[in-house]
Image: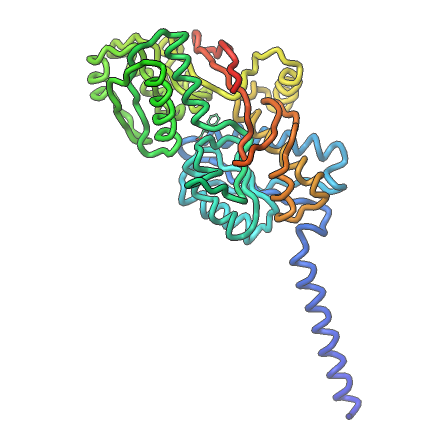
Length: 389
Ligand code: PHE
């Protein structure tokens, strides 16, 4: 072999070794670098943009605190966000980008159940856990009796939330009849209608009618006029703040004075901007926590959040913060940021003290947590009662 040939072979060896080193580096970049990249699939624009922003801020606060305390496993937590525009198809695109391009080890979000449901197959196919702080629809973690191995949440589920409001209607409002008015474009709304009805009927109540609207509808008066004629004791509206705001305003305008009741989707200051404080009097909804709860753990969080963002944290902010604590706890127990190990650790979440309660995941990847009922009084949220599961 000539000298030239030898050095050519040498060069080939060096180049291929370099290649191995480089690809080796890139495939382990997420675990070997000084950072742990976590995806945030959020509604940052579109119909429920405020929900996305609040949740993201809660997560960022928890990450900031953890990083200030030296990081997790000695590494800095980095939240890589993607905007799902409050649309299921965009939520699928967002998770795909976060996993395949950004190489995140876990995805937090989305917020709204329909958007969460649109991301789970991608998480599962890529073996990357998806942890929603807020998605309450029961099908997120279990479908047809089968637990989805890569799907987790930090909140209670709608069968509980729906029955809390049915019991509130029966026991506190003494309602014997109710109308259910749902957003038929939302899995969240449809699931809640079912669980509310089941419990209300069990309590001896009668559902006199079920009506529906679609997200982005503007004029609800024709249906509300029909509902007014039914003279029911209460109207159950499991929907999000934009539509809830418009419905409440128009209901009062046409003279509906009965209590309007709803669920966590009510929880945004924008509901007051849209409906006006007056229209929201005699309105009640279930939620995950109240910033007025005197529990010291809650007050500590409220103070830290206010100091950071200059506003009171909604339940979404608290749940976002809690989902970040769940992620951090899983990384520590896994002693790794490997997505599959994180999945295994998340499944074992036990007695984790968070702002909205204590999280122990059941066999269906759901925490068992209490709910609160909030009353709107002159545009302010008033903490009414706490209901344990
Ligand atoms: N539970 C809602 C859903 O599943 C999201 C939400 C959570 C809204 C908390 C407000 C507060 O779509």
